[in-house]
Image (cartoon, rainbow, N blue to C red; front, side):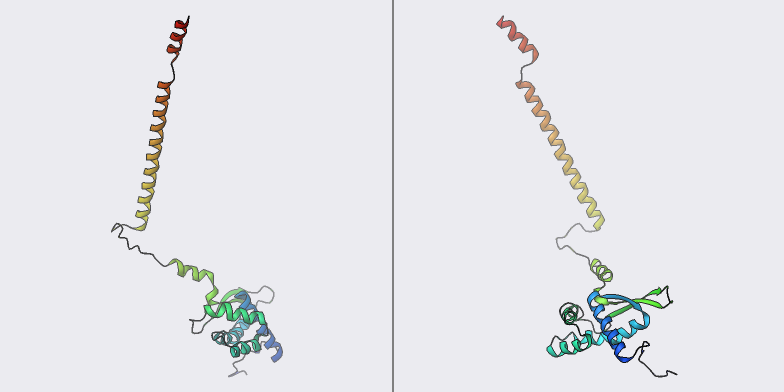
Length: 195
C-alpha cells in the first residue's frame, strides 16, 4: 500500500528521476511549453516552481542554487534574464497543465505544461480588452461605429469634390484652347485673302 507517500517515483531510481526532471525543466524554460504525460508534468511542476520562485531574487547565491538543479549555464541565464522579470509580480502558480488526450501507442494520458506568463493567446486577449477614451470632446451619444461611418462619408465627399473640381478645370482648359486655336472657317478665309 502507498498510504501517505507523496512522491511519485515515476518507475525510476533517484539519479534517473533527478536527471529526467532536470532535463524537462531546462526544456520548459527554453521552449516555454512542452508535451509530456500527466504524471511527469505533475512531478515537473513540483520540481520547477520553487526554482522559478528562487529566480525572482537575482543574486549569486540564488543563481548557484538554481544551477545545482538545472546543470546548464545558458538555461540559468535565460531564466534570470527573460523569465524572472515576467513572473516577478506573480505569487506562485507559474505553470499550467492542459490535458491533450491519450497517446496512441500505450494510451497514456498526455498533456501540455507551459509557463503561464508566456502564453500569447491569453496575453493578446488581455491587451485587446483595453479601450481608449478621447479627451477632445467628440460628439456625444455616438458610438465608435457611427464615428467611423461619418469619417468615411467625409472622405468620400471630399474625393467627390476634388473630382468635380478636376472636371471643371478640364472643361475650362478645353474651352480656352478652342478660343485660342483658329477654326477651319478662319483658315479658309485667310487663304482667300492671300489669293
